[in-house]
Length: 163
Image 1: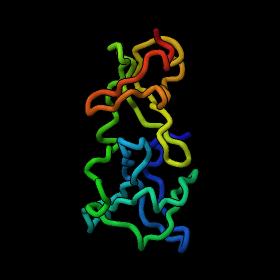
Image 2 (image 1 turned 120 degrees about the vertical axis):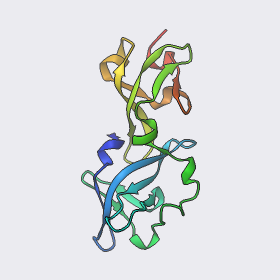
Image 3 (image 1 turned 60 degrees about the vertical axis):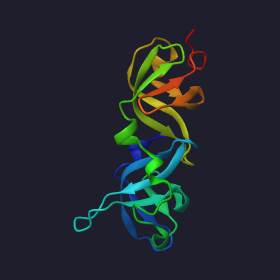
């Protein structure tokens, strides 16, 4: 399990040619499938637009680099289907409040936890407002998610050990 911010700054390299394509600038999450949908690369100095790499071309999220199949198949930022509906972890999710369905504030989202396949498995908290297991781990498992709104993530109180 890795934090999405751990991907920020990693080199993206093609498997076929060993060519560095760029560095990860942000991670985009698909709010319907709760998985990494794309990676945003830092734009070059002369080129202001960002390059968006869809998850489908990622071969592996490696320990030190992200390996992609080939740079010929990478669309520009406006060609990825439904890019506007994706959620940028650093810009749109970080700082979002997490509360239970009973209205109890649980904490503030620091980062999204993903597995090696890019699936969201949990939330890392920067602040915790409850006691118990969540306070000790500073994490909420994804399975506790009831809904993800523009301002608040709602989780099941029993699934995180609250009554």
